[in-house]
Image (cartoon, rainbow, N blue to C red; front, side, top):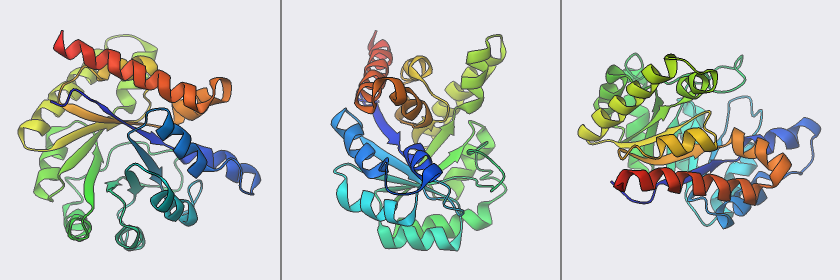
Length: 250
Protein backbone atom coordinates (compact mmCIF):
# COMPACT_ATOMS: atom_id res chain seq x y z
CA UNK A 1 0.00 0.00 0.00
CA UNK A 2 1.21 3.53 -0.82
CA UNK A 3 0.93 5.93 2.11
CA UNK A 4 0.00 8.69 -0.35
CA UNK A 5 -3.48 8.36 -1.81
CA UNK A 6 -3.55 10.12 -5.18
CA UNK A 7 -6.24 12.68 -5.98
CA UNK A 8 -7.38 13.12 -9.56
CA UNK A 9 -9.56 16.17 -10.12
CA UNK A 10 -12.15 15.96 -12.90
CA UNK A 11 -12.67 19.29 -14.69
CA UNK A 12 -15.62 18.24 -16.89
CA UNK A 13 -18.16 20.45 -15.19
CA UNK A 14 -16.04 23.57 -15.46
CA UNK A 15 -16.53 23.00 -19.18
CA UNK A 16 -20.25 22.38 -18.58
CA UNK A 17 -20.59 25.89 -17.15
CA UNK A 18 -18.60 27.37 -20.05
CA UNK A 19 -20.71 25.59 -22.64
CA UNK A 20 -23.97 26.75 -21.07
CA UNK A 21 -23.28 30.19 -22.50
CA UNK A 22 -20.51 29.56 -25.02
CA UNK A 23 -17.23 31.40 -25.28
CA UNK A 24 -14.04 30.68 -23.38
CA UNK A 25 -14.88 31.11 -19.69
CA UNK A 26 -14.55 29.43 -17.30
CA UNK A 27 -11.58 27.61 -18.79
CA UNK A 28 -11.17 23.94 -17.72
CA UNK A 29 -7.43 24.13 -18.41
CA UNK A 30 -7.03 27.04 -16.00
CA UNK A 31 -9.12 25.11 -13.47
CA UNK A 32 -6.82 22.11 -13.90
CA UNK A 33 -3.78 24.25 -13.17
CA UNK A 34 -5.41 25.72 -10.05
CA UNK A 35 -6.31 22.21 -8.86
CA UNK A 36 -2.71 21.07 -9.30
CA UNK A 37 -1.44 24.11 -7.37
CA UNK A 38 -3.82 23.14 -4.56
CA UNK A 39 -2.62 19.53 -4.34
CA UNK A 40 -4.18 17.45 -7.12
CA UNK A 41 -1.95 14.63 -8.33
CA UNK A 42 -3.58 14.48 -11.76
CA UNK A 43 -6.42 15.74 -13.91
CA UNK A 44 -9.34 13.76 -15.35
CA UNK A 45 -11.42 14.84 -18.37
CA UNK A 46 -14.13 12.94 -20.24
CA UNK A 47 -14.42 13.63 -23.96
CA UNK A 48 -17.95 12.46 -24.76
CA UNK A 49 -19.21 11.56 -28.21
CA UNK A 50 -21.63 14.53 -28.12
CA UNK A 51 -18.98 16.91 -26.70
CA UNK A 52 -21.44 18.11 -24.03
CA UNK A 53 -18.66 19.49 -21.82
CA UNK A 54 -15.00 18.78 -22.62
CA UNK A 55 -14.04 19.58 -26.22
CA UNK A 56 -11.24 18.21 -28.41
CA UNK A 57 -9.23 21.41 -27.95
CA UNK A 58 -9.53 21.07 -24.17
CA UNK A 59 -7.93 17.62 -24.31
CA UNK A 60 -5.09 18.86 -26.53
CA UNK A 61 -4.45 21.86 -24.26
CA UNK A 62 -4.60 19.79 -21.07
CA UNK A 63 -2.02 17.38 -22.46
CA UNK A 64 0.24 20.25 -23.55
CA UNK A 65 -0.11 22.62 -20.61
CA UNK A 66 -0.62 20.80 -17.30
CA UNK A 67 2.31 19.55 -15.27
CA UNK A 68 0.63 16.41 -13.89
CA UNK A 69 -0.75 13.23 -15.50
CA UNK A 70 -3.87 13.48 -17.67
CA UNK A 71 -6.48 10.76 -17.25
CA UNK A 72 -8.65 10.70 -20.41
CA UNK A 73 -12.11 9.19 -19.77
CA UNK A 74 -13.71 7.82 -22.94
CA UNK A 75 -16.14 5.34 -24.44
CA UNK A 76 -14.86 2.29 -26.31
CA UNK A 77 -15.23 3.65 -29.84
CA UNK A 78 -12.85 3.75 -32.79
CA UNK A 79 -13.01 7.56 -32.75
CA UNK A 80 -12.01 7.84 -29.08
CA UNK A 81 -9.29 5.21 -29.29
CA UNK A 82 -7.79 7.09 -32.26
CA UNK A 83 -7.88 10.39 -30.32
CA UNK A 84 -6.23 8.76 -27.31
CA UNK A 85 -3.48 7.15 -29.39
CA UNK A 86 -2.80 10.51 -31.07
CA UNK A 87 -2.90 12.52 -27.82
CA UNK A 88 -1.06 9.97 -25.67
CA UNK A 89 -2.39 10.93 -22.23
CA UNK A 90 -0.81 9.28 -19.22
CA UNK A 91 -3.93 7.17 -18.72
CA UNK A 92 -7.26 6.26 -20.28
CA UNK A 93 -10.30 5.19 -18.28
CA UNK A 94 -12.84 3.30 -20.38
CA UNK A 95 -16.40 4.08 -19.32
CA UNK A 96 -19.93 3.27 -20.53
CA UNK A 97 -21.62 6.12 -22.36
CA UNK A 98 -25.21 6.86 -23.40
CA UNK A 99 -26.46 10.14 -24.83
CA UNK A 100 -29.60 10.03 -22.68
CA UNK A 101 -27.71 9.98 -19.36
CA UNK A 102 -26.80 13.13 -17.44
CA UNK A 103 -23.61 11.55 -16.19
CA UNK A 104 -22.07 8.08 -16.22
CA UNK A 105 -24.82 6.01 -14.60
CA UNK A 106 -23.04 2.78 -13.81
CA UNK A 107 -20.00 0.71 -14.40
CA UNK A 108 -18.81 -0.70 -17.68
CA UNK A 109 -20.01 -4.26 -18.30
CA UNK A 110 -16.57 -5.69 -18.91
CA UNK A 111 -17.80 -9.28 -18.68
CA UNK A 112 -20.20 -8.77 -21.61
CA UNK A 113 -17.84 -6.53 -23.61
CA UNK A 114 -14.69 -8.63 -23.67
CA UNK A 115 -14.58 -8.93 -27.46
CA UNK A 116 -14.78 -5.16 -27.83
CA UNK A 117 -12.54 -4.35 -24.87
CA UNK A 118 -9.59 -6.64 -25.53
CA UNK A 119 -8.44 -5.08 -28.85
CA UNK A 120 -9.04 -1.54 -27.56
CA UNK A 121 -7.02 -2.22 -24.39
CA UNK A 122 -4.23 -3.80 -26.45
CA UNK A 123 -4.05 -0.85 -28.85
CA UNK A 124 -3.94 1.67 -26.02
CA UNK A 125 -1.32 -0.25 -24.09
CA UNK A 126 0.79 -0.60 -27.25
CA UNK A 127 0.70 3.20 -27.46
CA UNK A 128 2.17 3.41 -23.94
CA UNK A 129 -1.08 4.45 -22.24
CA UNK A 130 -2.14 3.06 -18.86
CA UNK A 131 -5.65 1.63 -19.21
CA UNK A 132 -8.32 1.55 -16.52
CA UNK A 133 -11.84 0.11 -16.60
CA UNK A 134 -14.63 1.90 -14.73
CA UNK A 135 -16.59 -0.97 -13.20
CA UNK A 136 -18.67 -1.89 -10.16
CA UNK A 137 -16.97 -3.92 -7.46
CA UNK A 138 -18.31 -7.24 -8.72
CA UNK A 139 -16.03 -10.31 -8.94
CA UNK A 140 -17.14 -11.12 -12.51
CA UNK A 141 -16.30 -7.60 -13.67
CA UNK A 142 -12.97 -7.60 -11.87
CA UNK A 143 -12.01 -10.96 -13.35
CA UNK A 144 -13.05 -9.70 -16.81
CA UNK A 145 -10.71 -6.72 -16.39
CA UNK A 146 -7.85 -9.13 -15.84
CA UNK A 147 -8.93 -11.24 -18.82
CA UNK A 148 -8.87 -8.29 -21.27
CA UNK A 149 -5.47 -7.10 -20.06
CA UNK A 150 -6.40 -3.90 -18.22
CA UNK A 151 -3.86 -3.20 -15.46
CA UNK A 152 -6.14 -0.84 -13.51
CA UNK A 153 -9.78 -0.68 -12.43
CA UNK A 154 -11.73 2.27 -11.07
CA UNK A 155 -14.53 1.20 -8.76
CA UNK A 156 -17.82 3.02 -9.32
CA UNK A 157 -18.72 4.39 -5.88
CA UNK A 158 -22.00 6.09 -6.86
CA UNK A 159 -24.39 3.56 -5.33
CA UNK A 160 -22.49 3.60 -2.03
CA UNK A 161 -22.40 7.41 -1.91
CA UNK A 162 -26.13 7.61 -2.58
CA UNK A 163 -26.88 5.00 0.07
CA UNK A 164 -24.56 6.71 2.56
CA UNK A 165 -26.37 10.01 2.09
CA UNK A 166 -29.77 8.32 2.52
CA UNK A 167 -28.74 6.35 5.60
CA UNK A 168 -29.84 2.80 6.43
CA UNK A 169 -28.43 -0.67 5.86
CA UNK A 170 -27.97 -0.34 2.09
CA UNK A 171 -24.82 1.69 2.64
CA UNK A 172 -23.29 -1.13 4.69
CA UNK A 173 -23.92 -3.66 1.93
CA UNK A 174 -22.42 -1.38 -0.73
CA UNK A 175 -19.43 -0.65 1.49
CA UNK A 176 -18.78 -4.35 1.98
CA UNK A 177 -18.92 -4.90 -1.77
CA UNK A 178 -16.35 -2.14 -2.34
CA UNK A 179 -14.04 -3.51 0.36
CA UNK A 180 -14.18 -7.05 -0.96
CA UNK A 181 -13.89 -5.95 -4.58
CA UNK A 182 -10.83 -3.80 -3.91
CA UNK A 183 -9.20 -6.64 -2.00
CA UNK A 184 -9.89 -9.14 -4.79
CA UNK A 185 -8.58 -6.78 -7.46
CA UNK A 186 -5.32 -6.23 -5.60
CA UNK A 187 -4.95 -9.97 -5.09
CA UNK A 188 -5.35 -10.46 -8.85
CA UNK A 189 -2.60 -7.93 -9.53
CA UNK A 190 -4.72 -4.90 -10.48
CA UNK A 191 -4.15 -1.32 -9.37
CA UNK A 192 -7.36 -0.04 -7.76
CA UNK A 193 -8.88 3.44 -8.08
CA UNK A 194 -12.32 4.68 -7.07
CA UNK A 195 -14.68 7.50 -7.93
CA UNK A 196 -18.17 8.90 -8.60
CA UNK A 197 -20.28 10.85 -6.14
CA UNK A 198 -17.55 11.31 -3.53
CA UNK A 199 -17.63 14.30 -1.19
CA UNK A 200 -15.45 15.25 1.80
CA UNK A 201 -17.11 12.72 4.11
CA UNK A 202 -17.21 9.73 1.77
CA UNK A 203 -13.70 10.43 0.46
CA UNK A 204 -12.35 10.41 4.01
CA UNK A 205 -14.06 7.08 4.70
CA UNK A 206 -12.88 5.33 1.53
CA UNK A 207 -9.36 6.72 1.90
CA UNK A 208 -8.92 4.26 4.77
CA UNK A 209 -9.10 1.29 2.38
CA UNK A 210 -5.46 0.29 1.85
CA UNK A 211 -6.10 -1.45 -1.47
CA UNK A 212 -7.21 1.80 -3.15
CA UNK A 213 -4.43 4.09 -4.40
CA UNK A 214 -6.31 6.84 -6.27
CA UNK A 215 -9.61 8.73 -6.04
CA UNK A 216 -11.07 10.68 -8.97
CA UNK A 217 -13.47 13.44 -7.94
CA UNK A 218 -15.06 16.22 -9.96
CA UNK A 219 -18.70 17.29 -9.67
CA UNK A 220 -18.64 17.84 -5.90
CA UNK A 221 -15.43 19.90 -6.07
CA UNK A 222 -16.70 22.12 -8.88
CA UNK A 223 -20.03 22.61 -7.11
CA UNK A 224 -18.42 23.46 -3.77
CA UNK A 225 -16.03 25.82 -5.57
CA UNK A 226 -19.00 28.10 -6.37
CA UNK A 227 -19.04 28.96 -2.65
CA UNK A 228 -15.45 28.50 -1.55
CA UNK A 229 -13.19 28.63 -4.62
CA UNK A 230 -11.49 25.72 -6.36
CA UNK A 231 -8.17 25.99 -4.55
CA UNK A 232 -9.99 25.77 -1.21
CA UNK A 233 -12.15 22.79 -2.16
CA UNK A 234 -9.19 20.81 -3.54
CA UNK A 235 -7.18 21.53 -0.39
CA UNK A 236 -10.11 20.48 1.80
CA UNK A 237 -10.49 17.26 -0.19
CA UNK A 238 -6.77 16.59 0.06
CA UNK A 239 -6.96 17.06 3.83
CA UNK A 240 -10.00 14.76 4.14
CA UNK A 241 -8.22 12.03 2.15
CA UNK A 242 -5.08 12.40 4.25
CA UNK A 243 -7.10 12.03 7.46
CA UNK A 244 -8.71 8.87 6.13
CA UNK A 245 -5.39 7.45 4.95
CA UNK A 246 -3.87 8.05 8.36
CA UNK A 247 -6.43 5.66 9.81
CA UNK A 248 -4.78 2.77 7.95
CA UNK A 249 -1.63 2.98 10.03
CA UNK A 250 -3.62 3.38 13.24
